[in-house]
Length: 431
Image 1: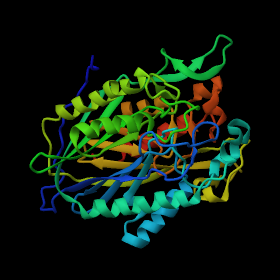
Image 2: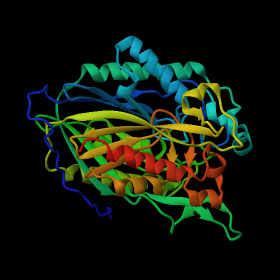
Image 3: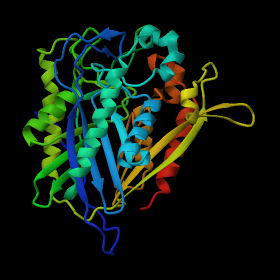
Image 4: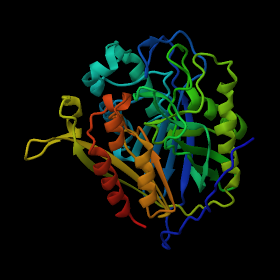
């Protein structure tokens, strides 16, 4: 049985009555499957022994006549912030496209490589063990970068007059993963009573004749349907569902993860791709996306958007050092307190929808708080945007401890600092 969808009305406001260039869009898909064995990321070190399903950059390009914007969803575990900056420098040199025009998100599949130098991982040896001691293949990193630049250039050349629609629904494919054991410890498992964000967001891009250009899906779920014993390259749940939807719609679909810090998949299959729970996600999530797409009864070619960025500051874990590569994300106050500076990105579409992103594995309670306080009709959080500063747990989670707290550069004050900072930013945006 398909999950019931809660669909919001699609109302896209006219922002300007003056003549403007027509809205244009494009969507492309670029293969980034490695041709040689690679270290898979997210669990203990495992070198790939083959490919189960190919992995991709999926890219949308938007142009409202004044601004070009590129959103990328890549089938990889994480992206290092410094690597994002380096790739954007290469992109600007080759195309003139500036860093602020590009959001690069990772789907967070644990069956694909990480890209970029180790950065923060070096600071968590006690928690992460030898996970960051492996020697990655820097040639693969450059391959990923080259393919990204190639894909953005291709998307730019394919921009065409377009229409846009937005809808919101729900899907029951995820679950809170912070399980309490009988002895009171918090472990990674299934917490059926825990807070979970099941909002499913969808952006539809179509040509003026109604034919589809591409979709962008937003949903919070850890890419851990496959377990630590799997050694085959895979997009995990996001790649599986994207491929299923793409087969039926005939165009690319970007899967952008949400506030998945404490959110896991409903089922895990280990390394058994024949397990019925593997393909169950095509129904639980894929069919929900298809139904939501069908629910979009109206779209508009009168699209205007604005892209902005702010910094939110919160104290750093006092026991944690820092790295020169992340100096842009650090500051020391006058009283000597070490601060983490977290970039928060925002994209406002037609003053009715705000999409905000951050380089975080955010606990879903914070995304829900921001959504509740947002003045916009639609509010979406795009997680692991432009890098990863690892986990940001809630204040309550810091008291409970657990894996995510042990891999967080923040303190229990982060929830208050971050949510208030993001809410202030969003409430100051044009409405």
